[in-house]
Amino acid sequence: MADYKKVAEWMLSQFKGRMLYQEEIVWKMKKEFGDEYVYTNDNGNYAIHKKVLAEFRKLTEGKVTWSRGEKAWTMARDGQTFESRLED
Image (cartoon, rainbow, N blue to C red):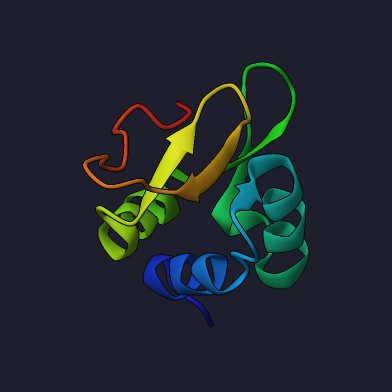
């Protein structure tokens, strides 16, 4: 059985190229690990469990940033940090 850190590590392994789109990764995560690591948000869409996101932040601090407009994680540029305002 996976735990939040293992799921976050898997999530990081799915980072291909420059972008990791939330909408795509959440479906893959649900299929790979089940409902425990995703939830339905107020808009009726699947979202990544906050504990997975917290572990992902720890793994990617200073390397990856959340792009709100793209709804995706991107490789951080020099001087950027991972934004703390990930989707609620």
